[in-house]
Image (cartoon, rainbow, N blue to C red; front, side, top):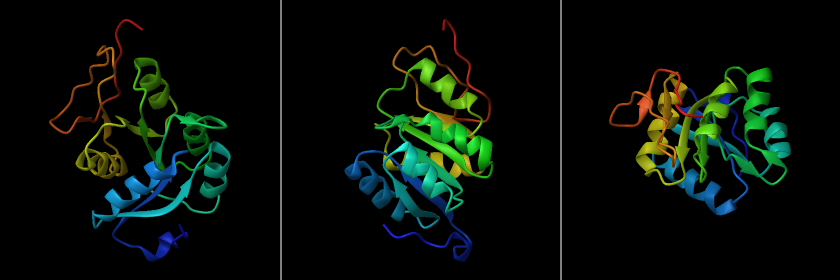
Length: 164
């Protein structure tokens, strides 16, 4: 995918996709393209390529996987928190554990944490709400993560975890 100059896109939310599976990036990109206000401006498949890409573009949102081939996706979120405070992260993972949820929010850059089973509406909603500063999450497998939520699974408060 070619990079788009985000300064020319005025009313849309710019997004970078970070996942090691090309089919996942392609699917998310396709879903995002169906929403007028979401614009995918770049893709990366590893921590290294993500940080390199984020050095070139300054997206509103980074949708990232927790597990990347060269390290945890949260390394990207930490880099964003340290270097690109404007970019907010939406974590999309197949392993939504309590520990992962708390670690993600503790980076300071993560605004949403979703299991890789969300509907296209939920993923788009989480990106938009994260851009506006609202935290979102799907329940973890152990169900001890219980943020106050709305029908979309989004909350404006920091998640709490019991029994961890």
